[in-house]
Image 1 (cartoon, helix red, strand yellow):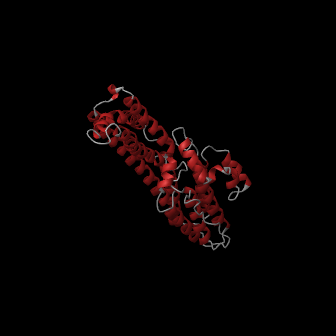
Image 2: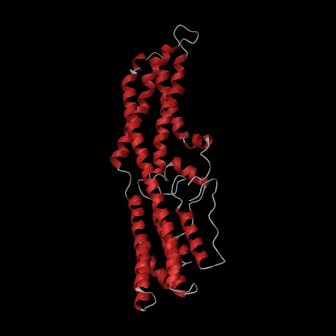
Image 3: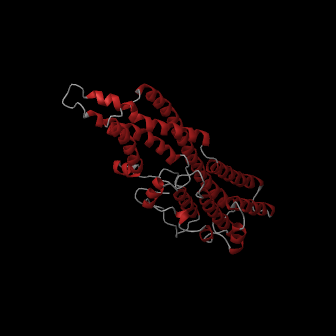
Length: 334
């Protein structure tokens, strides 16, 4: 997540510079050819304007869907924050003692669940964008924690060796950690350590965690529909290619009868660049938000949120050696 006031103009230009180079070339080629006498290259601007309207609608639709996915992801992790705090104090008070080994064990397993979940959500998918040159270059400004360490090393902080080996052997580690929580809770209930009402309360929290995990996995594993994504790309490409051809005659006529006659044709390059850059950048912004867990500057900061939850829950047990909060690097926090 970008934590600054805004993306700077320089950042935007650097981020889109590859597309700027390509758009300049696409604008310059028909302009030079027209100047050399190939006047038949000029096409009426009206059909291109109609195409631009269609592209604007579909790009806007895509950006709206991208924002919806991003906002839903943030709501999911907002619910995990609240439910984790409730789970912490309900569990602590149900087992009567802040020094209870079982409370500490279940707290640690919850931190392990948060860790396993964020590692699963950071796993790359074929449709995500972090592997492209544009996004990969910007990613060098910050670190994605889940790509610097392996899950085993992180889980060692929270689990016993036997439990660690059991969890690592499973495909969906987060699910199995929550299943272990349920098993330990059931054992406590059978031993009479908690009553019916307390068992129900804590079990409801575990169900909420499982529900939110499923919602996050749905967003992670179901991309923005490829048919909508593909048609947006194709229509945008057609529009970008045809814009310079549609403005040739208009800019050539602009200087008629003035001292700029014959020179205004070259205005086609910067104006075509401006128009096509706007559309292309709007599409890029949507692409930057459509996968809210991949680790871009526009994603939900699940690593920071997980650390915040761990700090809050450790504080409930009056622990003094709290882990440090995750602070932004170059205005980026993940």
